[in-house]
Amino acid sequence: MSEESPEYVVQTEEPEAQPAPAPKPKRQKLVAVRRIARQGDALCVQYQDGDWTRRAWVPVKEVDSDKVSADVLAEGVPVGIRWEERLDMALDLKALAKALYRYNMFTKDDLGRKAQAMAAIREAIGPIYLHLLKIAAKEE
Image (cartoon, rainbow, N blue to C red):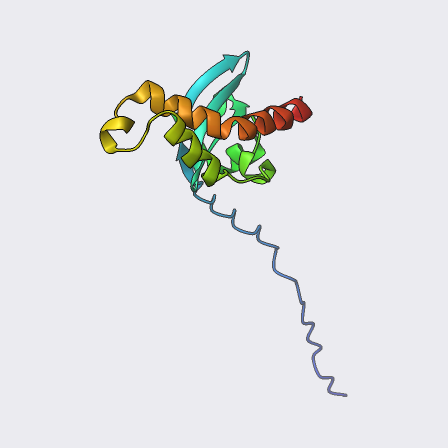
């Protein structure tokens, strides 16, 4: 009688793959917006982006209690010209001073005559205004 050792079969089954846990949705940074206009399913909103006031068209359904996700704003269609990126001239302070004198702006009381003070300022910034118009015309 031969003694045979019993055969042991070891079954190696891989454990069933467990689905990865669903990632927790990131909390979206909400940005306060002001509604400017609506066209169909799009809303033009105004918001603060750091120091800058911006406008963008976003889907109406994304606006909740006058707040919009920062991601949605980033994907929105920008409105207007980014002046800070386009202006390439400075105010001529000497021209402003000369205009203030021409309009008799010598004291604080003189500046209180708002119409004359504004006329002097408009005169001094005239070249900048013309430059702004040229920039805007190129954007159209």
